[in-house]
Length: 138
Image 1 (cartoon, helix red, strand yellow):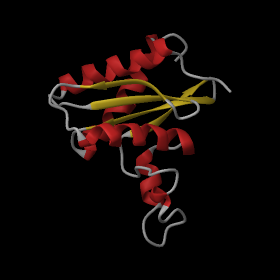
Image 2: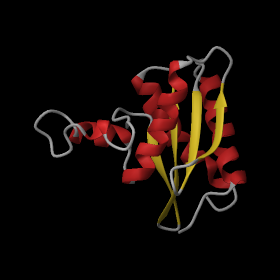
Image 3: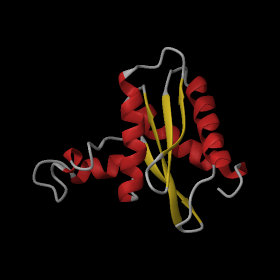
Image 4: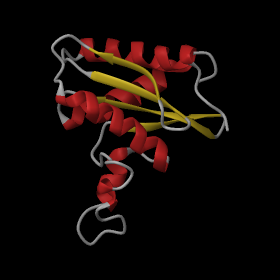
């Protein structure tokens, strides 16, 4: 199984921090490795304490299912094929802000952000995954 390096994880955190500053919001940013274990984390000054756990769970959810958390949310509504999935695996997050990290066609981790609006949480990791091409291997 391929894994994200510490250098790559830290580069993603730094890029997400820059984006959070750009949109003038305080975020919590978590990057997990291929096994869903925390690899890098940052809590900006004044970021919500409750969002620490949410950012980490978004990253894990994205990695556990290799899907964006917002996509899982659409499938987990009442009557949906994944209804109540958020109560599995010690608690998942099924709203936007978590994305899997893919390298050479293999998922190597996930990133989750929390602390702003759903729209900002949705766009921040997507933008920063794209902007992290200078991180070695991503």
